[in-house]
Figure (cartoon, rainbow, N blue to C red):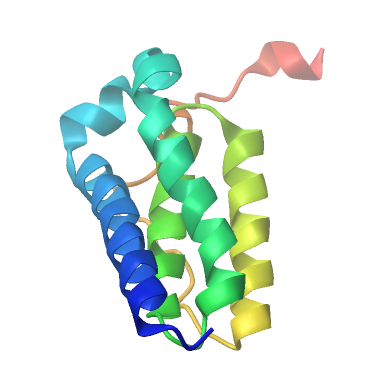
Length: 131
């Protein structure tokens, strides 16, 4: 893909997709309510993720793959915090596959207390499970 016009369009679309995910991730209010509003507010997130996943294999030589893979990590964290563990794991798997494809090294996810998935923060041991 050496067409500079198409590359420009792809880059702008990737920038927009990244901005959607970044803005949502940086909003504590959005992340806290994402569990309840995922059906509505998750649609732009889904399309942003979908576009990134489709664009990286095609244009990985011309785009900042590391930044895009970090955006996918952030999206996975949002889904995990919202209780959509399967979606988060699938997204992480796709991100790892793309990192291997593009030979991109991305730092492992490190959670601070504010980023720890909500179910983990409030997970109290239950002795009833052992009975």
